[in-house]
Length: 216
Image (cartoon, rainbow, N blue to C red):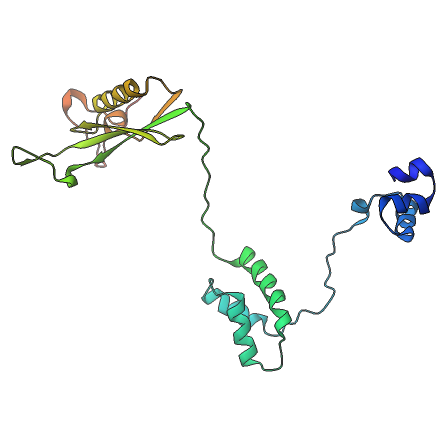
């Protein structure tokens, strides 16, 4: 269309655009671009060779969702000799792909996390008693408050005796002293001391056997 507006000659415009004169004449007559002329096809150009045995194929896929199209095709060739040709494997693969999208098992959804430098730090607790550390012959029962920067995976662990707000404060403070900077956000899990009321050092238990949450 651009070349046609310059020269006004279908032959010259088609040649400069690298297409046949007849093709150029078609676009000029239609007054539309190739992308505008292309229409999505909703009909089959040839008969589906698997229509007759598709219920059997679908039954096998329902029983074994992980079954590969090649395995199904080999079964059909063996069971129905001279009925299928090797070139039809691609057709079966496309049909099975469509079937899995509509009727196959649900796929596990993974939401990718994007971490940015200096944005957040994360804190969590882990038991370290399994390391079997002893002090004066006695097993040292303890936890680690692990501070992590998700972007760089930098970590700092602080020894603590319980999962508490005091332990979080201690672990975060020591980690920040090491990096010399403060992130914009600090993230941690639902620590028991942070989410449940423990007045006077005693745990409160509701009628349903669960401890009530803090009001703020």
